[in-house]
Amino acid sequence: MTADWPIISATIWLPILGGALVLASGDKAPNVSRWLALIFAVLTFLVSIPLYTGFDIGTAQMQFVERMPWVPAFGVYYYLGVDGISMPLILLTTFISILVVIAGWEVIQYKPSQYMAAFLMMEGVMVGVFAALDAMLFYVFWEAMLIPMFIIIGVWGGPNRVYATIKFFLYTFLGSVFMLVALIYMYFQSGSMEILAFHDLKLNLTEQVLIFVAFLLAFAVKVPMWPVHTWLPDAHVEAPTGGSVILAAIMLKIGGYGFLRFSLPITPDASNELDWLIITMSLIAVVYIGFVALVQQDMKKLIAYSSIAHMGFVTLGFFIAFMIMSRGDVDSGAILGMQGGMVQMVSHGFISAAMFLCVGVLYDRLHSREINDYGGVVNVMPWFAAFMVFFAMANAGLPGTSGFVGEFMVILASFRADFWFAFLGATTLIVGAAYTLWMVKRVIYGEIASDKVAALEDINKREALVLTSLAVAVLVLGLWPAPLIEVMDVSIENLVKHIAVTKL
Image (tube, rainbow, N blue to C red; front, side, top):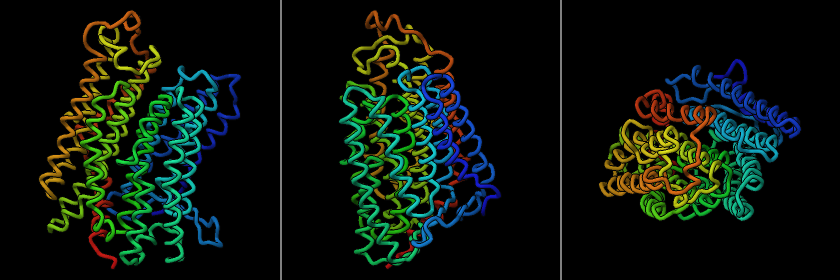
């Protein structure tokens, strides 16, 4: 279906235009730029809602399609559309972006207009990544994402921000170069830059394996998968709170989305041949990184490692499908694993954003992220403590919260493939509970640790608004995941049918 008016383009370009206006407003009147940023962020969210309300859940075809020539000489089109996989991620992006603007309201005093502008532009570009159906357009948006993030960490980050930004940039850039080579190769093979044309492209096994590895290098760095994860803790520790939220809640999802949109449908045979590699990397991330998180002293580092472990579930859910299919269980198990991976992506978006915002609240007051500097926070900040404990429980995968749904679905699907996969996957619930709750115990509970903690003030209305909206999202998705699963059901079924057919 094509849109009567370009909803997707509006969702991409409205925040980018807003970012330009906020930048133009300058820092003379910081409140003007803040309100401008908030208005544009809310407008973008409102514009993106019709993607959900007008979405037809009965078809796997692309919807709200927009297409016009961009570089006609090379057959490159400005081609956008959404399906059940990309639409929830676009709504997640537009929702979280509002919270990031509100979260940085009072905290960012240095060049607030530039800070807000960077986030708005980034929001537009990330929506572009999820909606692009032309490989060149996808690549342009993919690379454009790096620039605002580079600036956010590099200008408003911590003391080691230069090291963190350069590491982040080099890692992500290196991966994407290989992806570009793969895209150009497929363009010469198919004569088109359309991603959907690539899905039907006949490739032999050698070609598939090389293209798969090229995509893996790009997407594994983004997720990040073990062993290319080391940039993430550094980037998180140095990034300002808003940067951490966007990085954890949305940017990591782009890697997972890339697997669903590119790796699996374009190279199904290579994915089948190399699924053991991805499953191994995912299980190492789930188990080993959980233990790494256990020894962290810095709260942000702990949550960063926790993110890597939780994203391991996503990739496990996506690639376990082949093993389940080899056992003859095409429908239910493989679909369940992928749905679980998708639910986990959206859920992790809410929970990790909330955890980083909680750490941000403490950091704004005490200017420390070290666990040892806190203790007994519940005595002086009871409301904050309630939120923090709730999100910690969700992070540990408590039933009734969104953290449980995705993980449970992936573990159930893993059983269909191999008992040990499910066993190792399930250990993370124990290890995850260990590092999350131990952090909460040391930070929130106990006696008041110092005079500084005794002087802390509870959350204000602005912070309460942000945390409440995330708490509601985590609860709703945990108790009633049906709307999300219905939206992606047909798209994922279609993808599973597509990858079950060999291209050889």
